[in-house]
Length: 266
Image (cartoon, rainbow, N blue to C red; front, side, top):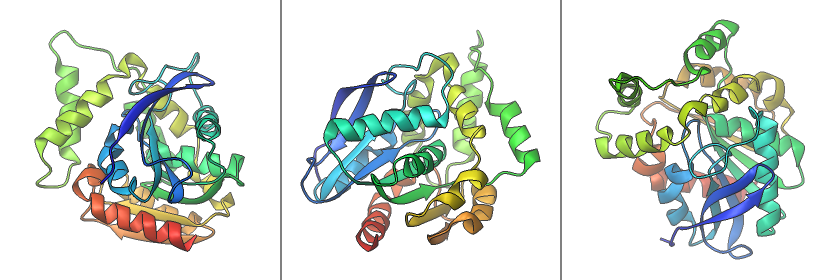
């Protein structure tokens, strides 16, 4: 296990908070880890520690989430991808593998398309291929400001939703940790959803020529991710119905093994 360190890096949207393990230029090909929305790179701390002994691994907070500065205006997926490219430049990383989860899967795809010489392979977790009806429902429910209620009922709803989609036996302490990270984006937490819903995997994922490993756990995006298997030009699809949210913590070693296998073969 390697020590996870934290620091700030200047990016095009302001300061970016980064968790990292290992050292640039040492070990295997570096890994860039991109979190879901709302949330932060904290979800990857255990995975960074696991992988950092053999490669440089980093997990930034995307602009507006965690401890990173918010963008000036409502961002697009391309906005987030530009920030990630700036991080690669800062650390002097000519080539990386990219792990993207939910919204992070879309940032990963855009980065692979925008800088194909910098991205060697992708590992995507829950990359949804929505129907028009599903997308409209998601937008109505999630792509709206989270207004605080005086009685705290908005917090109860959000925590209940985390419990709903957590696999049986997930420690409540992990859900509390994720819940706290989700609150940091405040009333702009929906900006990540707006960016994600405007970026359709059906339009972009088939254009990716790098090897893709698409993981489909049994979370809230399982059904639309099952449809995405046909969008992969090169790579493979793994259905993992017993896995779910918090898998980066509860199944760290298994995720790390999949990352190493995919990276070594790419």
